[in-house]
Length: 386
Image 1 (cartoon, rainbow, N blue to C red):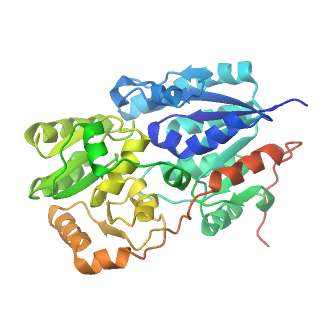
Image 2 (cartoon, rainbow, N blue to C red; image 1 turned 90 degrees about the vertical axis):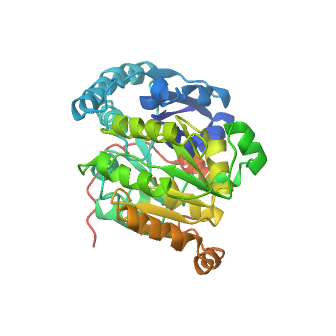
Image 3 (cartoon, helix red, strand yellow; image 1 turned 90 degrees about the horizontal axis):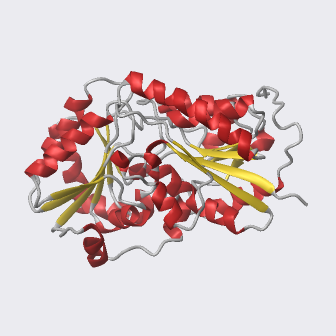
């Protein structure tokens, strides 16, 4: 019997981290021929060249598709999308996968999936049906959903949205948030081990900051400045900062991060890529996650940690009770920080339930990818809600 060739395409560190437990299962399965294509920020030294993390995990990268230009302008991003499509078609032609596996809403994934459409390759997509109204990712995610054939969702509400988009319910699987598998399968670092790994000295209070460009809004510099201004007023607090994604406006944020750390060397440190062990351990060993990354909404509740979601980038995403929301305003942010530290809020989050599940999603996805019939799956009919 011929092995089913399943090709995972990944473009950045966070996406790979979410998919890595599934990649491990695919790699170990004797009935699967795993293929990996790395592209996007994975191959950029500016963002930590995280392709090496994939290889350090013991996985072979079958194709490396360089596509990032040394600019985060709208023109640069659009050209990068074109470069992705030009190069990925050659990879698909050579590897000839039976299924493409992608996650999320990145612009390079849109190029990947639209190329797979032309090649008549079925696409399995994770994280469809979700909403992030403040970023172009929202439209990209829905577009990827319509070009995909197998759908894995994090909760029932998201599954229903995909049906609303006209997709066949028989090919939509609510398996929970796949990123939570990494948490339950990882032995996290202690506070002392994290300090050694990151070469830092934590303080009485510690915060993890992860902020990305809000691609549907202007004034990125002013918005991010309000966060840094708020953090700079905090006493006896250490700030661990994770670099933003490779989105339009990202270089501006990186420059502001570097300037901030330069002024606050004793109280902060920035990382191009923390790596998944360090990132999860940072959530576990800090007092608060702040910014506009999905990690503050999806992962932080599993650690019973408060998070402050700032601005509109994640607007519309379902949140746990441990998540506070703030506008990009110094006083509002400081008030949210004060609330997160309060005894009442700390007591409340001890019993918080993560709405995205508790893990064990990867094995469910593996079973679907192995068993689903691919005959005529690319010939989709629009499913009308009765």
